[in-house]
Image (cartoon, rainbow, N blue to C red; front, side, top):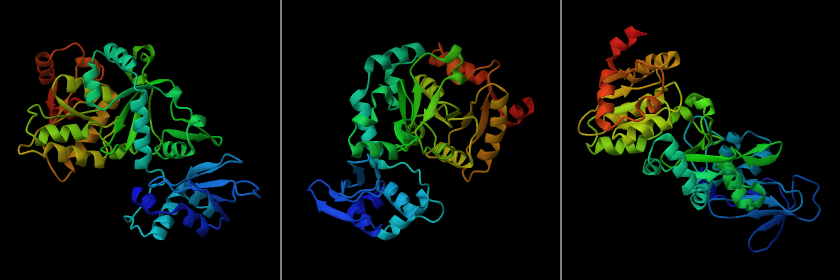
Length: 364
């Protein structure tokens, strides 16, 4: 997507789409706005490298180049991407094109906004309440921000377009609003990053972790993402992880294990997709020594079903690291179960909860 936007000339694309162009005013080119009855060109076409976008000074219509193509050709977003790729000479991979794919330029701009508004006091208070260090959150790239400060009407047209393409602004009745509001701990997801996870910075509802509100930026592909994967690969490939690779459900579980000196990835849900299973196996076999995979999903009925499904997915992978199951003898997720333990006590407890795959399946 980034290569398409880098090559595209929004003025030339607008001409191809049938828009009547007006004068060039240096920073932008005017055109008759197709979104209202426009007699004097009021649509500004901005040719910003990597972020071509438009804004109408009369009716307020705004968006990125893909939005313009989609609306003018009356097509789906994916079809619009394919048409634009053909026009600018970019070869797309065969198969489905996800029209909600996250745009790298938008992600970069939003990351800059997070850095600017990062609230260290809010982060410190949240970390203390969770019994974790601020450094552990920093190792995950987390920022603490009040999303109420992200006001679309105060952004430039370019930033509004970029944030929408990054999936952090969404449309509700033709109005742009943040995907989530209030104080949030924001985690980048994926290597680029691919998306963002928002975790409310307020106390858990009724103290029940599973009822905590989590939201993802629009366009996030959960089945293709593992939180903590890059860190896990780095430790395993460097030979610095004798404990193996723990597979857990949530971000806080990863951070709890990380603080105890262990390596974990989160599937961000109760199920493990075939894509995630392949990534887990590849990470466990990325070093000189193959490390075991420990399935440590929540100790409840849903977690047991997910464990059985994950075992099947892991054994269908091309790589094959040894797999076992960690199942606590009490309800709770890894973050809750290990809270308050020191690294030695935690390892002792985990060893007591570890079963072979066969024994774990028999227990269900």
